[in-house]
Length: 247
Image 1: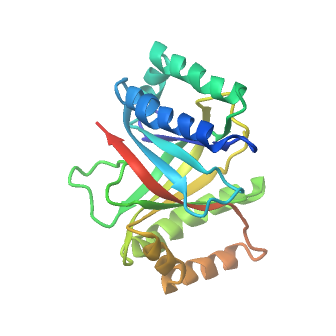
Image 2: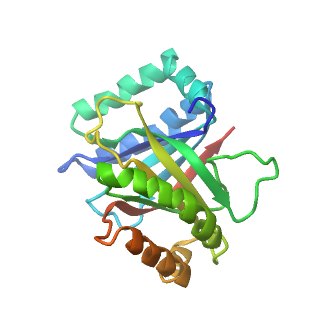
Image 3: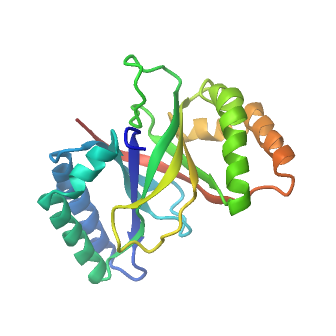
């Protein structure tokens, strides 16, 4: 894990009953102060801020995905005074009953696919020109986790995902494993999917085309052979990109 790229998911909503103006003030602070300051610190290579496409109460309304080249760089950020001070400021919004901080997992990249291969040959969790993402993760029992890992590694990665990224409007596909690391201690949820897929699209219409594709239908049919009782989604939600930061 030491040399694999990592992402952190920092997603949240407003506390029910919060004045919209207060939550907007928090969002403005996050975008114009917090993330910009983060980008000046060592370790972080990029951040993407998203809003929930459907604004469903089942999932966080917004959040950012932060990109780290490896575990060492993630650790280096966590030791900075500025990083911890900004975390304390964020915690103050929770104490004021403005912020419901929901997700804070750290995921390690297992495999990355792009419809246009990287010119450097290096795996990179960052992606450009993909303003819509879909977070997808199955609810797996302990007994199913190993079976899913083996099947997806052998068939999903080699047979299906390479087809997905060549469908119209599909820009990329990243497959992750939960590291068990956590950036914050004040998040509401503490149990996360073991494996997470993030799919990238050029627009919401491309996402719709993907859901109706023969390739996805074949993938789901093949999974039913391995898991005859079926698998239910723990996460299945789409987000729209608002702003990106890179260095």
